[in-house]
Image (cartoon, rainbow, N blue to C red; front, side):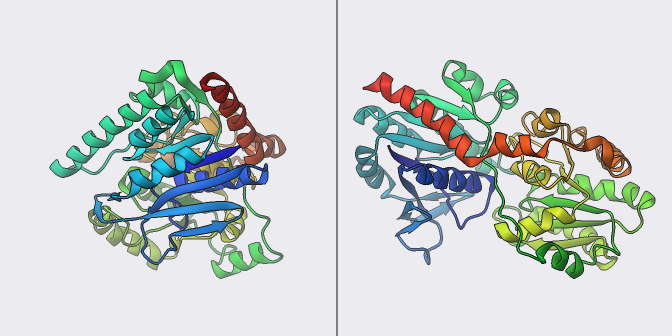
Length: 387
């Protein structure tokens, strides 16, 4: 099968969406499919074309940026050529160009499948409100032209204003999750570098430093946590400097964080590659995902943590609450409620034995090969309908 995957950003850009897309594309390639990823050349230093892990990557040059999006004038021309050459088109939303790609799928008789990752909610402001409106309209067009839509969980779909319009062509498929085995001594080296033995328990957060991630909720919860565990520390893995569109948010929170940093209660780790993340998780006592809105639909990092035996405390957002609800490894906290987040984290820290799960079963449920097989069944069914 020739599979064309289309999305605005692909690796090395780091986000839950790009990690998902990369894992799925690699899994398709390992299963013997011809896989092409069409994306934008968001960084001019990246090659226009290359092949990584059996996946061909085609990057379209960017002419301008609008908020968190990009304008790539040649995108439609390249999409026309690539859609014609492939058997099925898989798009990752949110994506401004998806309606045109989905329409091309219809015109060429190629099944077009959307994977809907989350809603797009930009920070307040007249211009961002306009951008939100445009993206919502384009997503609606994409859903109309697409043959089918995939979402992570039925829980998220049931609460999504967007997905509720397309219930008749919707299939929940769990996301692909995998981590490499840490190199010998890597976990111990990580512990020594960050003085884990002295600064326990360790609360992990793995995310971009962005308003929707709820960093301030964790900050507001820390005093109550430190009252019971004076040596506790937060390890924050992910981009935290010069995050697009988040400068004001960072400026507001950084003075408080710097105080915790100086006292040894907060450490920014920056972006970690998969091998570094494999050493990060085993050093945690709990991972928290205190996200605030529907731009978070699941929280892949929760499954990565659970695969390392680490319980999680997410907010009660639809979809985000599902890993803990499904697997019992943690406790769900009220959205935006720092007191409840602190209480939930403390409960998990004080009674870790209550939050152990069936790691082998979890690994099997999210194995990229299994997820790719689910997509294959969907693609084959749709190809049968369009042939």
